[in-house]
Image 1 (tube, rainbow, N blue to C red):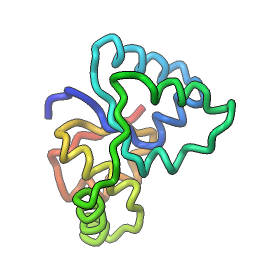
Image 2 (cartoon, one colour):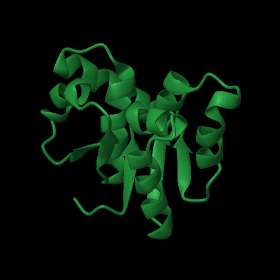
Image 3 (cartoon, rainbow, N blue to C red):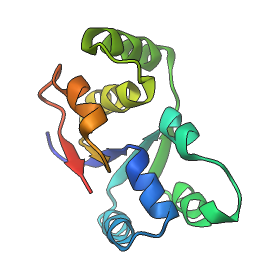
Length: 130
């Protein structure tokens, strides 16, 4: 899988919100390299609470290389099927895997435990942990 972009799970967004030096360096590198970042709307809903504490995250989400991806009918159906196949209930994690598969890009996460069971059903998905 060639990294022409990334799908971000909740962990990277939380890292941006907390101004983690690791995440800020990653974000800067991706921006400088003009690498696209895709954030499933389900992931954004999981972490977004609004307010001044999320100013860094709000700024990140406005960047030209960042795309919040809607939960389309196709992605929703595929996420539900993936949950059933993997025996899990977390549609947010499933939508991350389905989005990565659709776009052909790796996932960047803070905790791959929740994604491992889902990824096992498609070995083409690359998961990178921060």
